[in-house]
Image (tube, rainbow, N blue to C red; front, side, top):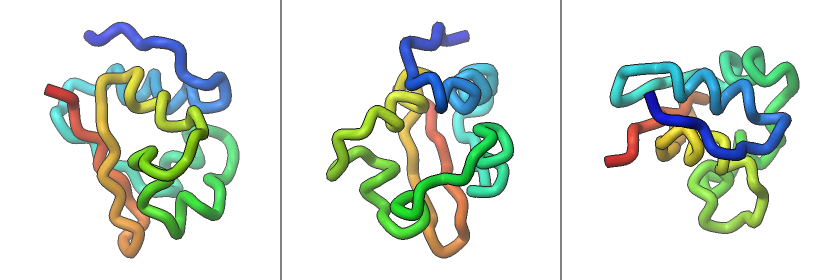
Length: 87
């Protein structure tokens, strides 16, 4: 199992969840992620693909899945995110 690096404290539960999954791809709904986190995702997460890819934001939230050895592939219409294992 991949050893988690430092993820932001508020996103640590998501990091741990993803790190403990053996599947190459883990798909979660926004609602499932909010249940894991214990708080609502920010509005940008619902409307901006870049929030998930880290392309436009300096926030450390992306460290949660990067620390678990994954990338995020959002489907905003379906309100899901596929977290794929990094090669």
